[in-house]
Every structure is written in structure tokens, then in C-alpha cells.
Length: 332
Image: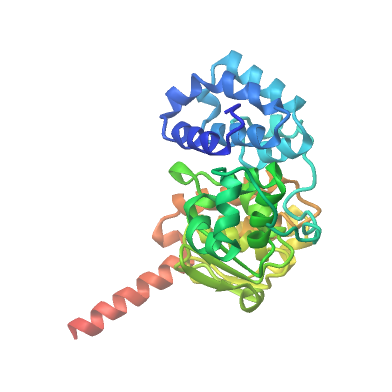
């Protein structure tokens, strides 16, 4: 995790994500030590690697080491620790001090550098200069996840120019794996970054194109993967007016950005996994809610959906009635 090579670190995160919780828990103390790394990318990756653990997976000494490291980490890393979240209860998470959450302002439209000049023969920069920006976008950009590209950007003017040309463009091409890690762990840091891109108008996820201007009024979650719902919620959460949930209910989401927690009205709404990820982006814009309160509320409604029987769910009852009528019509 401490390697300066972004590709090696990305591989390490991938391998750690494939470990069973008991095995990953044995590395928790070592990972916790990276939470205070001077390289915030290393610190955030270490936190994300630990997000799949539960409090029961941590030995007491590892839990203490992790909490000590996270509290000493930067506010940006503490934000990731809350949103991931690290394996602590809500009371402990409340002791952290995150920086501005997902509703942070867009990235400043910094002047574009141009990928010109010279680079050592045979170097990665020389290869990029030889290919040109357009060829890099078509042939090389899809080969690496978003996070390694972001990590490489500050290393040289050439790399910055190549990466910025794509991140500042109206269209961003990503894969579901860029925001959804192993075992469907959520990478909110990447989703947050995408939400802050200043010129983004069209998002292409796994080859499927989403026109953000057309979707700003209404998003239909039905048929969306968890990753797509996550990104759309992050990007559109500050503008979205209504959404069709997995169960078919149309929800007015605009009021969710202003009301206090007790007045949100979500106690009557049952949420699927994609619903949770979409609404997380909406609620994160609500200045009256803290990140851990947001996720606790949404997870409660998601768990309620998992526990609710068909007879206790009005939406499910309607779907069941339609199915019965369809069968009766076919038989008749």
C-alpha cells in the first residue's frame, strides 16, 4: 500500500478485496498505519480496503490502532472513513471530523496544459506524446481504472495534460469497476470526484451513454445497476427532482435536500440497493444531515425492504396482483 507506483497499489487493493474477512482482519493494523500517510491516495485506499470488515472482524489491538490512525488522518481521509465506512459503530464515527462532504463545489476550471515537449526515450511520457491525446482516449484510457489515472496526473506536466484532457471533457468514459470494487464495495471517493468535474455533460458507463442534462429532472432506477445508480446519484443529486424507485414508486427527491432527518418522510419508503445509492447522492447535499446519519437512515429502509413480506409491502402487493391477473387472463 505504501508503494509510490499507483498500478501496484491498485493491484494491492484488488487483492485485499478478495480476502475473506477473517484473513483481511489480520492485516487491519498494518493497513491502519497507512491512514496517516503523507500521500492521501495511499491513505484513502487503505481505508477503502478495510471497509468490507465488520467490527467483529477486528481484534481489539487492530481496532484501537485503526481508530487512532483515522483520528490523526486528514479531514479528507476522515470523510472517506465515514462514507466507506470503516468498521466502527455510529457513536465512534461521530467523533471524526470530515471535510466538506459530497456536496463540495465543482473543481476549479484550471487552465489546460498541453502534452507537448520532450520526454526521455522509452518512458511512459514519451509513449503518451507519441500516441497523442485522441489515441490515448481510444486505446489506452479504457485499460486503466479511474483511480490510477488520477494518481498519475500530478507526476508530470505530460501526464497532467493527458489526464486533464479527459477529465475536463464534456464526456467521461468509465467502467462500473471504477466506483464498485470487489464484493460490490462502494468507492464513494471516486463517485465524489466524478460529481465535481466542472464540464461533465455526458457519462458513459460500460458503454451505456447517460445524458445528464436529460436526466436532471427524473431518473428511473429500475434496470440500473448499483454502480450506475451510485454515479447518477453522485452527479445529479444536487439537481434531481424525482426518481422512480426499484419498486415502481415515483419519489419526490427535491425536498430531501432541505428537510431535517425527522421530516424526510422516508419511514414510509422501502428501498432497494440501487435506490439507496441514488438517494445517498441526494441526501449528501442536505446541510442538515451528516454523512453517517444519511447512510444509517438509508440502510434502515433497505433492511426494512429485506425483512418485509409481500403482504406487508403495498408496492409488492400491487405487483403480485398484476401477476395474478396476468396468469388468470392467460388461463382464461
